[in-house]
Amino acid sequence: MRLRPTALAVLTAALCFSAQARPPVAAPAASAAPPGAQDGIHAETGAQRGSVRAASARAASVFTLDDAFGRIQDTHPDLRLFGNQRSVLEAERDIAAQKPAYVAGASIDNALGTGALSGTKAAEVTLTLASVFERGGKLDARRAFAQSRIDALAVDREGRRLDLLAETARRYLAVVAEQRRIELAEFDIAQRKRAVAAARVRLEAGASPESGLLTAQAQLARAELDRSRAQRALLAARQFLAALWGERDPGFAAVAGDPFALPQVQDATALASLLERNPELTRFVDQRRIAESRVRLAQTQSKADVDWQVGLRRQQENGDFGFVASVSMPLGAAARAEPGIRGAQAELAMLETEREAKGLSLYSTLVEAQGRYRLGALETERLKQDVLPRLERAEKAAEYAYRAGAISYLELALLQAESVAVRRQRLDAALDAQLALIEIQRLTGEPFLAVTTAPAGATP
Image (spheres, rainbow, N blue to C red):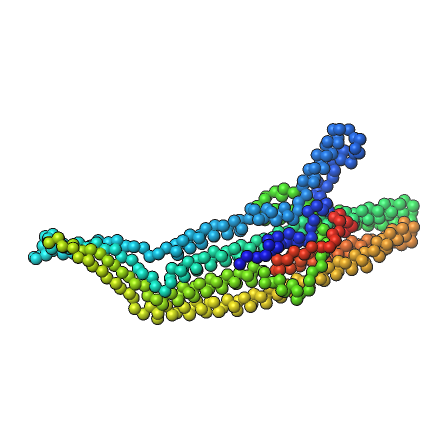
């Protein structure tokens, strides 16, 4: 059973990543521009050429989700394995399509005997040709059974392909998440540096003790540690993504994507109607065909085959020839075939129960994913609209008040920590929503596109 063409592009819109989006943060090795990269159009020719080459190299290092999907579909051994399996099944189909072989034989009777049968004159030479006449449509049943297994292979491959694309999207999302965490750490470092500068001014003016400056410097060191941890985690996430297509060293420095771009999705009832295209359910259609073919194949065994043999016999004594023929057929074929028929019919009936159980399991997973997505999207939007604007105004007011000596460093540090915590909470909520969206797309085969996409590199 073939899936809709949109299923062939499923998950391409996962995470709503734009292939043209600027990466939020480059990898550590590519984050800094080389000297001369910011020169104007009237800069020296050599520096200008170097700047253009550096910019081109950085642009080439940007990796998109489509790039990852392409490498998976081209190189992953799990997908190539289906080609080998198809060759095996086609060979088995060709074997099943063969008719019973003809058997040629020769026999000599009454040779090298004693008495009246001594010598070669009493010998009889018989040449025979034998085969089996199949009854009950066994040949057609074997062909249908072998072909049904080949047809089911396409759905199995599509299911495995979607699973690999979903895993690719999850690993890609992990890379984007670490890039965003580096951005968040940079934001924290910037505000901690401002706090250190303000604390130094107050210390030099005698308005605060040295402990305030030391505490601010310690908080700055912790923020820098968070950045180093995120950079290490980014390297590990890139390697984990590249491992999907067998690369030991990732050939990209950064990936493009905005985890805060969350599209509208349908409710659980509407999404449930899309489950029918899921390969885990569509495979039951092919499994039913296989089971029905197996039933027909078992039923053909109730018709006994007829063994026949014809030949020509020559008597050496007088040189006469005679025609010989024989026919034989086993008895009780219907009784012997009956257990196999019962087993094949029971397997066919069991498929309906298995499909019902799988449908309930997929629906439960879909409902849970849709709920997580709605919750994550709501939390992300509310934090952006209601919480972050107030915190940003509070940060500016607190920094001004600290410089003026109206509040202590402890109050400023608590507010800065809260600001970072809220931004981290918003990022975690968006990432959880994106993971739920990937699962929804894997289950339904439906790509969801965002109406608007936040620009990459926006405030975390």
